[in-house]
Length: 226
Image (cartoon, rainbow, N blue to C red; front, side, top):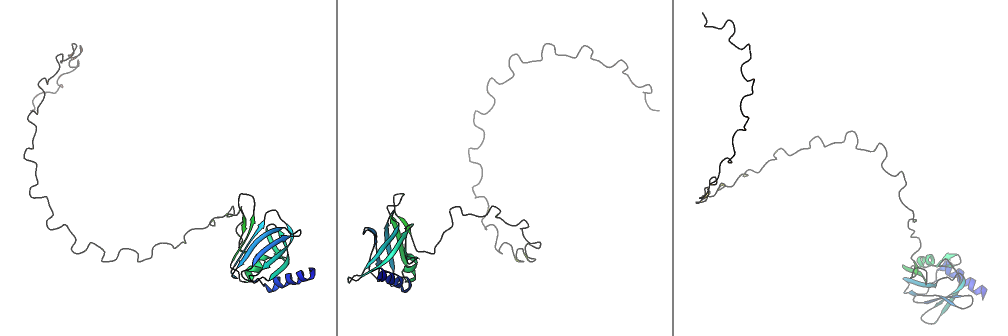
């Protein structure tokens, strides 16, 4: 039986013989079912593995007409290996387009799903390097600028018929309304005027020393001209 399993395993690993529409089981060495899946028409491969299982097991494929194919496999880190080859890679090489391997019961409340191999993403800390950016001398070239002929075309301007319309202007009845003017009671109020105590202050008047300076008078040569 060991020789038969090895031969079948090598056959699948290199000939990639996956029967279409087969039911898939993965069992542990003690006979427990640790994986369930199916092959869908030669285009889809689905497999759900039991979380926490790791080690050798048996892959069992059962075709719709009752044929059973078995091979020794190894489950490691949620991945199924057949003869050291990832089963997802083998299925992809066999022409399967939709490949899903899920680990049921994984932490976080849902399955840990792995899709088609060969589609790596950036690591968690991926990002531009610290010195990312344009080089120190980056900028427009020395001769950068508008081309020599840049500018509006020679015939740029308003169209020939541009201008106000023929009837532009105020309407015929424009003007103040008929009753325009100050209201009938316009004017200062009846009690308008300075307050009762208005007037100059009590000490209003010229200062005590007001008057012309002591030497004020006409100049010495004042008089009519000859």
